Image (tube, rainbow, N blue to C red; front, side, top):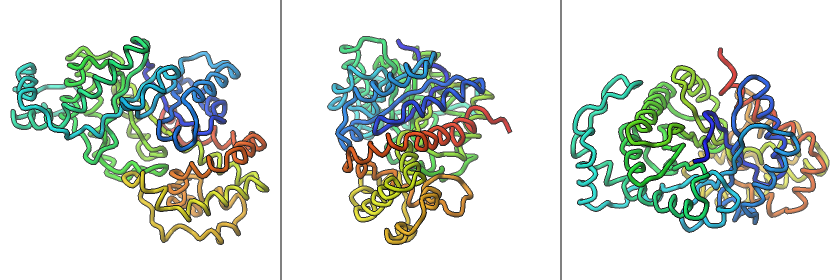
Length: 417
């Protein structure tokens, strides 16, 4: 298998103009003593909205790596693929996020559930897992309920993995994603899921469970931080145990599909990584396009005019843009300022409203969430948008690099206080 380093970080570049600016943040991190592998990701849905192809992601990343002389591993992720969408990604990707959330809860055959229990007598007694204070105890009924809930999803992951393997061989990284579902997976459920995936022969190196709390797009975590810390640490321990117990890759680690900007979680994750030596994959996805809009607003002139237009159009189409993301946004529409008001703002004022700086009185989380899910407005403008990115490359790139390094990478990987 292609080995994924201990620390990896997913970045989105929806319009394929910011790969160098993103890589500059990884360079700053490496200069601070922490080498993290960049993973450029883009989903089939995003390609469809924008009208791009997976090859564009690899091309942009490869150009950036060559231009900046990046000497460390890097990857291109076919993000949230399913069997019906994976083929278009096979040539361009070496990291595949297999999304089986829609198959969670599809009923499993009673005989298959019983057979799994028979093959895994370890669940009939309390399981002592290093790193978890209390043994994991599952009654026969509890184990059967978990298998019934997740067996179909794990079998689907196996089918997709074998399809990828037939086309690409083993020289890829496999992630399994179960985060886009209603209910979080508990550590005991995660352990059973990993056993099911091992039986399917899926050589996953990262798994993205759904954690408790809200992971809304582009804004901070909403939930009990102490509970998340206990859950995250237990999931780390489960991954280590499952790797040894079920023959999964030694590089197996958690993937946190953050929706970006989960600033309050970074100290929690950092503490767990420091105390355990575990790895993590963090996926920030779509906020790069928000930093582009911030840069255009700061640039003034035509850039500011377009940033205002994008917001006005998103406001007029709020139902359309928010519907596909209803489970991962919380927008108070009463806090969305009228377009006429925003049109009176200066570039720095508009940028401050969108830029996620906790404690800044001008920051508007509702505007940020709306714009996060409205990226196809920029696609509608086509060359006008991308030409302005080129014309204002320096100021836009600065927003992208600073956002990644200062607000994400430094607190997650560098800060110790």
